[in-house]
Amino acid sequence: MARLFSARMTSLTSVQSRIKLTDGHTIPCVGFGVYNMRPGKETEQSALCALKAGYRHLDTANIYGNEKSVGDAIKKSGIPREELFVTTKLWDNMQGYDNAIKALESSLSKLGLDYVDLYLIHSPNPGKEKRLATWKAMEKLQRDGKIRSIGVSNYGVHHIQELPDNGYSLPAVNQIEITPYLARPKIVEYCQKHGIQIEAYSPLTMGTKLSDPKLKKIADKYNQQPANILIRWSVQHGYVPLPKSVTKERILSNMDVFSFEISKEDMETLDGFDEHHVTEWDPTVSA
Ligand code: NDP
Image (tube, rainbow, N blue to C red; front, side, top):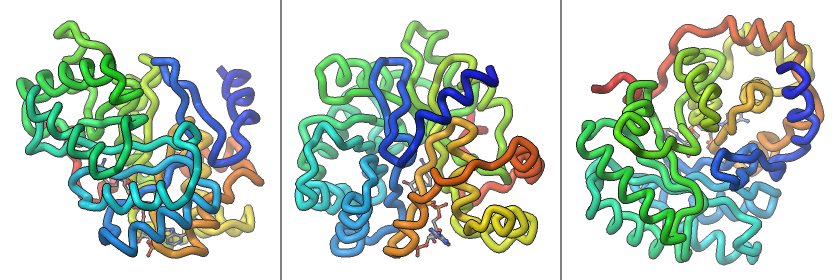
């Protein structure tokens, strides 16, 4: 296990380095999140800035209302489609088989794309029946080539396990909030056992813990910003963090997490910060 981990780490040298998913596709190891960005100029400029800086992985969602601006940034960047990894998410009100087909068409049209690299069920909240019907549609859309990888977000272990229990495939990805302050050991153990890639949303705790003296102490030791320690912690655990920023300096500095390595002891210290700190919502516990 330790040897596997270090082999994997040495192969991750920038935000463009890719990790293999169980379905055979690959995903850039750090993504750029666009939640809470105003549609139009703010999203377009931030996403374009990120793409020019070197990010190749963008994480949006229908509910963010900014898919069109993300699509505009992609077009303006001139980066070949195959170099990019674009994720969007199906919102709760569009769960169900027919709705899911319509929702993806609408997202593709706003993004100006023929396919997305990853499509996620945004949350398990609408209940089991809707979740399963949605997943059935996702499997079809994947077969049709409109989605490369299919995944879920905010799923607890019981939500994921109901897929194979009902004859469906396992997701390639589970996108959850996970930071040193919210370790989620049960979901991590389950996902790792089944090869489900964990994506870490709100990896900077939405800013709520960036001034924590415990974190600052470790950041100072590595001559890094607290944000870099949180992003690097995620990468070293094998998660795919999705930091968001509308600030050019931060967009750039958040990528700069491949020139240092957090020691095993300091990773353990960071792991000890767990206090189940949820920043916004926690659908992983829903029925
Ligand atoms: P983050 O944890 O990424 O934190 C973003 C906040 O941190 C912003 O206020 C930003 O400010 C600030 N920030 C960014 N970089 C730095 C830095 N280097 N130093 C200090 N402050 C910094 O929050 P998000 O909730 O946006 O999560 C990231 C992404 O995860 C989302 O954009 C979205 O793609 C995804 N997500 C998914 C969810 C889901 O349910 N599936 C839920 C929530 C997020 P500023 O922008 O002003 O620079």
